[in-house]
Length: 224
Image (cartoon, rainbow, N blue to C red; front, top):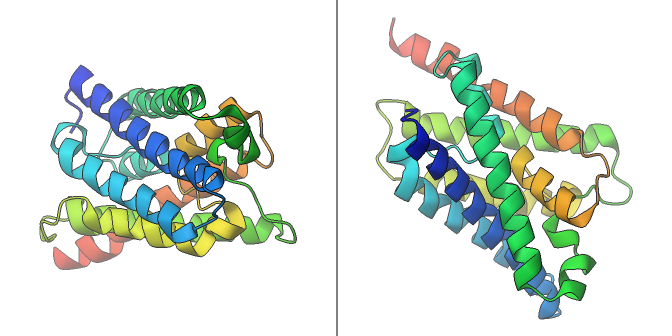
């Protein structure tokens, strides 16, 4: 799916939109004096679905280093191509976070750290790790089951967006429901909040690697 510069632009733009809209919803909720998790989850889910539907034909619509890693470990994408995708995704997240900081009232953004995912008080690292791993695994499964699999229903990115939305509904109050290292990195960079940041890379990337399960179990059995 790597078509050169236009694919890298699509990965940048899709990740930018995901972070700008999703993190923007977090800040906007604080401005309104609300903490409506459903609103935030819907914002993230809908913008992801829309961007995958709009740009999926250009780059595959990854917008997430964990998704790209899943394609690498299954042999669907070369490491060289993946590195360029990762750079585009991280840049999209970083630019979105800084543009958001410029566009939103500073005190509101600072109060919620511009949407950086954080582990809730009383939650252990192992618990947070399991949540981020499992939810990213389910997210990547939705990518393979609705886009990669040739038998997949042609529903654009909406199956993926819905999976991302429910992931935030489950883990939002516990880990922030990142499921995306780039999203965590951009918010952490602009806010300066790096608490347990390593977890938001390692757990999702391992969840992305679990794409091998879909390839080895679902696709392999179908081809026998």
